[in-house]
Length: 141
Image: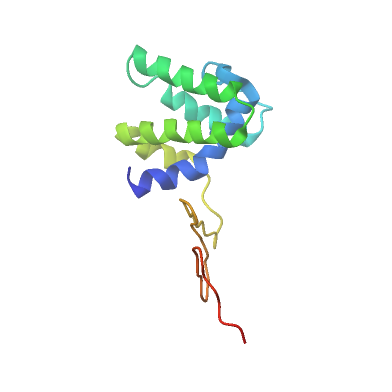
């Protein structure tokens, strides 16, 4: 998976999670409600882009994943499941990789996103010294 896909999934993930949380698996077929929150509507549109692509088995898999996320009570788990769905779709569909960025809101000027992944990872924009790991004994003055 390329860094480009990860950069697209990060801003799209919350919208997709909000849409599934609001509408459950019906998000795939529900007509967009004009009164729906902007994030939910965006997530719904993103998921609808994923759903019609591919054959019946692909649509069934999207329905299964969205249904699983809708039934889950843990938002972090739902976000992870839906993020994997988005990453796979972006990896397999060049058209989606071109269409999704146009749907996402532009980041505010000066906005910086830093992601740390993995056990004991750290992330910082400005940092002096960062020491991680077991058994570190800093010198005492």
